[in-house]
Length: 293
View 1 (tube, rainbow, N blue to C red):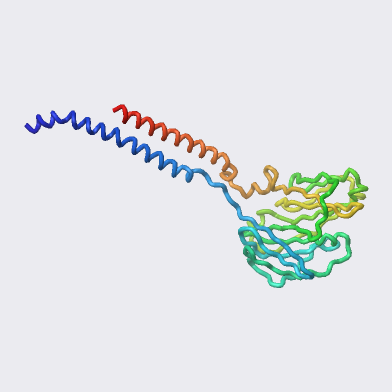
View 2 (cartoon, rainbow, N blue to C red; view 1 turned 90 degrees about the vertical axis):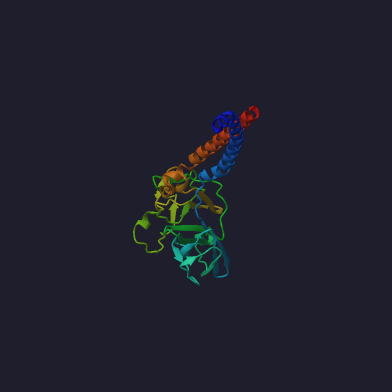
């Protein structure tokens, strides 16, 4: 008797199970769509953020104050002043630091200015090491010359700064090349000494030079400032660093996956759109089936 009743009730039981399945499937699909929406942004590659170091300067009488800005520390910072012969004179620190953190200021003694024309711009350079041991420099002027009305051809070519003679040597009579010397990442392969090395600034007399000049600013190919001597005084021209050029020295510190980050983001975005489309399609289809049954 039980066997016959079970067989009689089997169609009803199967119908109830089918209804339950048709109702529960849309719920699972909806949950899967929500889960995909929540998790997919986390699968997208994030942009690589590098630390930055920059300085703010102030000069009061014979005292220079140098305050670190940015989001990371600088190590063994030192300040140099441009002398009349182009040499970079190191300034005496009133409180040397091995590590300078954001917002911390260091004071230096600023000797009386000389009478050489180039000293009138009050050129300053700060040199420091980052947390990996790579050395950098930052140039500033307390009496910055105006932007040059006439410029010369200047750019990094094959790792060296190439400067072409001016079209009018009677206007640009000479050019001072002001730039920190940066060796890039090569020195960190050897034991670090944390000793600053800065060659003198070079002056090019265009009355005696008629062919292009090549200047070695180190493998880091930093930005350079050209101070042109004109009949009305100094004028400045900025030369972009080689690190901003395709294949420049900045590329040696970037892995392949960082260089391909844009493509990864595009692929992730396409995957997100495709996943959401499929999830919505499955959800709608499931509800239509549920209504039909």
